[in-house]
Length: 422
Image 1 (cartoon, rainbow, N blue to C red):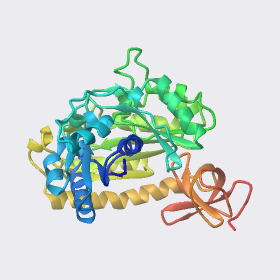
Image 2 (cartoon, one colour):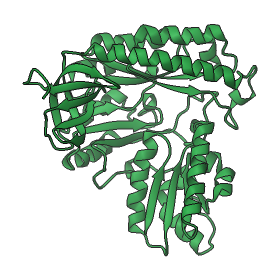
Image 3 (tube, rainbow, N blue to C red):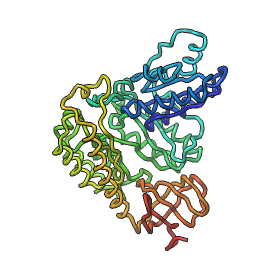
Image 4 (cartoon, rainbow, N blue to C red):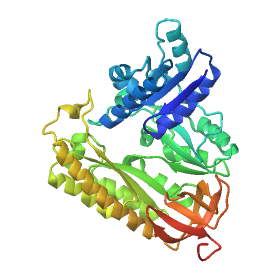
């Protein structure tokens, strides 16, 4: 099937887009097909999905345009108005070839069921240096602002055996790093008969030699003492955790239905950073949630300031159809939310600089993702962006480097056996 897959949204979507491309390559259909893997996590994500579909419809008027995934489930009418011919929800993603065939002959849509994740496996090499490995889907936390848990279906986990087999394939394909992704990794294994934990999964994956592992994002309740101990004792587990905070105010967290307090969040983050060598942290922060006043926003700033995270992803709250928070009052004016987001972004720049500067003089291992002349650029094990100068290494190589300076937005390094950049 002559199909092009376009992706909006998270790393789970990116993984699934690779799977979709592999499935579509096996099918046959006349003409040109564009598949848009959509996102509905925010109003902005909905808009990006619609805009992409509208552009594809304008540029490829004769093509079949298929909208799949979260947006197809949660915001389908808008995607159809933008120009999508066919909507395929998350439940039927893995049967996309059949869905397209049915549509082309005017048949009824399929009535699929939620698939077993062991059946999801990337068989070919990914274009990116850091490969993605999806091990979990669905969420039962039920945050009041979140649409994702409503459209992603029941909890499903890939068994450690199946995940390890996929990791072996990715390692053989030459990927030096595998990023473990899921909708809520803290709930990994809760649906499986043996109830393996995230620690159990990583222990199994570590049996695959020659590759390092990174967690994409994990809620604080998933950062157990056992997980921290595993990270502390295993150099092939990248010492960076992205911990969604959302708010540092306990009253707001309760209204969000987040399963932790601000103090519990800080305790988990500090335990990881204190115990794991060269650890760094990332965070998500939402501003403008209904009822967030200046005091609540100040608490968010205080929590993040105490941790000085390397990265902060900042979101302005947007009401999602079908969520409880869309009915909450008082709603925060857009101008106030924008001001808070700008304030937080300014502070986040300072926290990032401080976090980077902690590692000047340290030695790290950089996965070379970009090569330009005698320099490579990529991510270190603790997620620092590093440009290694005087180093003609192939893309995908792990380069040992000593960090010698800070530039705009990244650190500068030289090979670990050199003392200055060339």
